[in-house]
Length: 245
Ligand code: 6PG
Image (cartoon, rainbow, N blue to C red; front, side):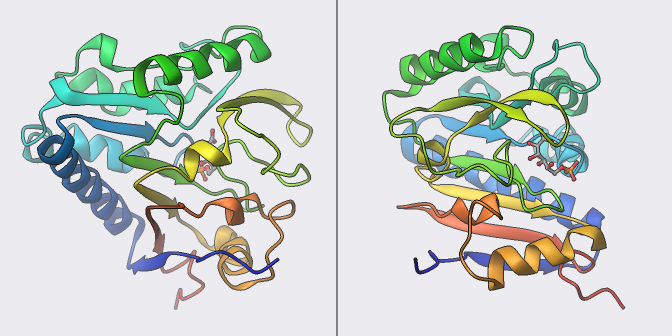
């Protein structure tokens, strides 16, 4: 199968520059969505990479330019842990910026990692359908990528594309022996703009394989990300782009 478009790769000098670029893209998309459609629907990435960008969003220079009343926050995936766990993507986002911006609590839609996974996935599908309709279309979808080429909680070894019309999937990640919840490719690829932020030399082989290698999304699930009617931007530091001096 021929590979879908691989999106634009923007290589920044340092992780700090990646964080600033990510925060600025978030602000730009928030302004654009607010102006064009009234509200800004965004799905946050978990893991460590986006934390610095989230902290920048809590800074007055960016925070005070956003109309948080009209920002609707969702999550791309979640670990099946309670929200107070240090493993929780929700806790990471809450601590990094959601607790420091004037966003109404009801605007933040947390995946219930503390609940039985299949039930939690079904419940989150309902939240998406009730708040965004049967074909949720995010203005901005933030993602990361592991050094094995996974994204969200779509991990190697399982065909990421087998969903039909499921919006949220409960997965068991053999590699870590844990359950997770994840948005599915139909939702991810219905976004207006997907940004995948990648940092560090350890990810350089996967980033090269995902963007330049043969199309094999079972081996490299991040390859499944290709917005049907939207934009894909990769943000990478020099190390992850294999350009570190
Ligand atoms: C998660 C993320 C996951 C993450 C990658 C990269 O729940 O961990 O959704 O897909 O984006 O594993 O993680 P780092 O940013 O920590 O390297």
